[in-house]
Image (cartoon, rainbow, N blue to C red; front, top):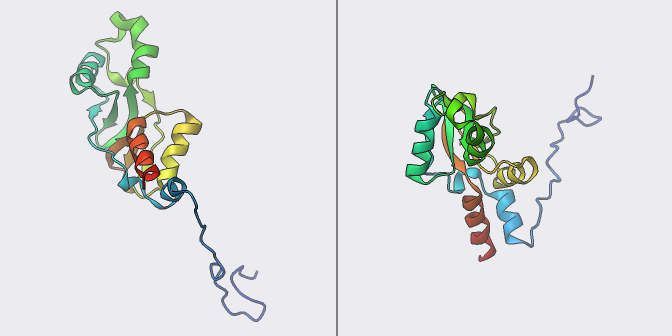
Length: 162
C-alpha cells in the first residue's frame, strides 16, 4: 500500500505545497474565517449545579439579568437552561417543577464550541441549529464562557466598521 503523500519515486510530497489561502474581500467573512472563538466576548457567564432548583436558577437569571445559565455536574457541562426553557417547560407546569432540580427541565447535550474554533463555527451553530446561546469550553472540557446573540452581533458589527 502506497502513501498518498509519496510520489512515484518514493519521495515525500507535501500535500500543502500548493495551498493557496483564501482571499477575502469582505472583512466580516475574513474575521469569521480567521478569528478564534477566544476573541469573542464570552464573559461574564453563569454556571449552576444540575441539582440547583428551578426556582433558585430563575432567581439567579433575574438577579443577573441574563437569559441563560450553563448547567454543570462537577466541572462537566451537561446542559443549558435558558429563557426558552422557562417558557416551554416551566411556565405551564410552574407549581409542579419550580422546586425540582434544573436538570429536569434544562436543554441537555448542549452543542458547544472550543475556544480555539473559528468564530464562524459559533455563527453556524446559531444559524443552522437555532441555538441562541453557545457554551465555550477548553480542549480539556472546562467551561469558560458562552456566546450570546448580542455578543455575536457586537463581533460582526465591529468588523463591519473596520
